Length: 339
Image 1 (tube, rainbow, N blue to C red):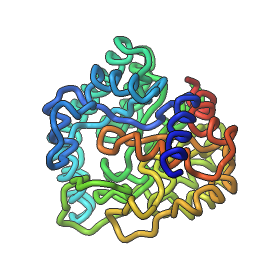
Image 2: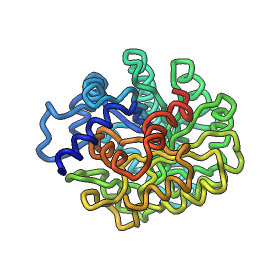
Image 3: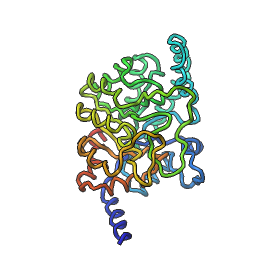
Image 4: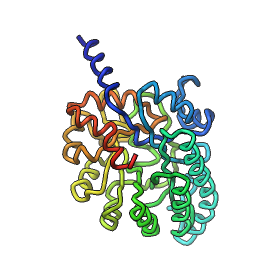
């Protein structure tokens, strides 16, 4: 009987259109080996480059994938140096931040350019570019945004934890204003860093251990000022099921312009958190999704570090009706991200 039920789930998955609203990808197989350090994973089982990702999408029936540009792991040393600046006196920290930013900015621009070029070669890949204060002042950040939009960027990705800034920092206000003006969605990490709230099914080195006081830049409560100041801005907070999911619910009840993705999944017997923070249990996920509003939740994976298959199966086995699953798996992404 169990086998028949599993067959029914597999058949249903084919019938649903799937859009992955949260993926990263890499430029080379070597970058993927560093980024996804899974012991025992064969080269033939790696699908993180665009060419291999398309093969993977075809195999799983994934229609489109949103590429969120991030600096590859082996080039993140300046980011870890920047994170330690919080221990320095204010003036010294600002001077060092400017110096380190000059190392980070070219890396951001390089990945942004690559993401836009990749989307031209593979139209099923939707490019979102990175923006951070490492690019310079407000004018420099907006210039990068406008330039990449002219090259095909469909939105932006921010990662407060990785780039050590608070999302409600007023230096970012011109970026939010320009995104609101252009109708560009923003996807932001909204979990702890460096130890992600990822719910994992296999050994995975998600981030390096930092020797400094931990600051939760990406805690959801820090986005309230942004949502208040920019009511027409489309803001997607990633990782609905990870740490501080209750804060995400509170924001959803107050601000209609905040949305969420399911990347990393929900806590279950086979999916455990890397950090001690409380994660949203799979059995509670349908209730929370409906409280937020099913129309505001998109399927995302965090691929390639985390695989699609377990997360797709988790969405499909939730006690949601077919229309709710269809919304989460593709329809919401088409509307929210203008795909």
